[in-house]
Image (cartoon, rainbow, N blue to C red):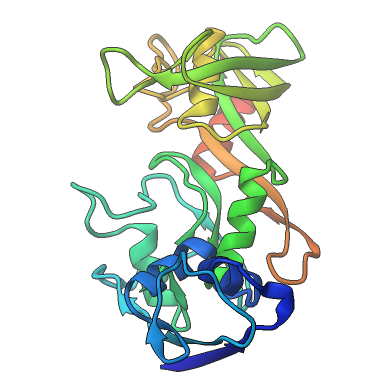
Length: 309
């Protein structure tokens, strides 16, 4: 247990208690502080107070911080490909087939299970001992995932994603020959009307989304693309590529399966190759890269060297 004490001066007169606390420490977000106050972890002049309490000059505020509770998720000894790690965050190369968060049908074997085993010094994010996943990749998408190890890092990284300060580069194999060497796909993305597992590109419904692309190579029945999503909507790249009739190879949900005398791509050929951010504590620019995975690389090699369609 830790005890933080504050003495209110005239410069903070009449602020809400939760606002004052959020401005006078950097460890916790205002929403988390509000929860702590609601749980009775904050007092003013020896008495419990509400988050909306307007503080006065001379008030003595005490905030009690308890160790984080356990998440209820089991730690598992699962190997991780660590790209970068320090006391605030880490970046990992997630393999295709690994789910990020435990969910119905995927209670074990997830990235979170592996992280709880790997990180012995996780701080409480939201009051719970758990790794702070600030963005996600689909189960069958491989590549870079960032994890915050404490509340400060989580807030910073989440803010960078929200404010579109993160630069992301994906690689994909897509069905067909993309005629334009580069382009921008800009639509709204919303939930499909009949298939709730799918998203769809629309004009008037959903949330605005933008993806820029560049063709790296064309090999007969497929093209190799570099993609730069400006936004981060659910299934964004997969939906956008399907909307221009070039779905990701192997994507069962959006039409990327192929037939005929071609090699089969066993999963959606989408890879989160590169992420550029500012460090969540010292704000230094960082670049993380995950190399092209063997299944995508082998597919490219087969058609470059050994296959005659």
